Image 1 (cartoon, one colour):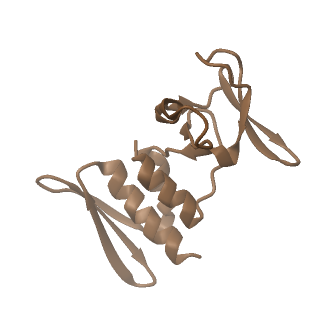
Image 2 (cartoon, helix red, strand yellow):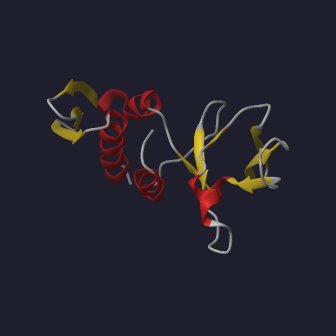
Length: 139
């Protein structure tokens, strides 16, 4: 799972999330809400937390099984934590390779003929850094 900081950077760069069952997220609520709530990681699931799409936007509905009382949050109040496979899929045709180095992973991408490499000890973070570059360039 990628770090909250990288997830926030991806969101700020313009990555759009369309919640699906199995997606993980954290809350990003106003400062008057308890900070420890933001540290919890939630999973979208039809039985517990489901994405409900409305003409005014998507909400994440908590179906009464969480340990604290929260009916729903707007999608803008959630920070998506994409999985490694989701990050790789989002890189699409720019992805060239994943290499295991001695103490890190290296993701290589190619965009407009330029090859770029992104290293990190965590494979998901390496994919996330590559995606952050791609999203930033596409704006």
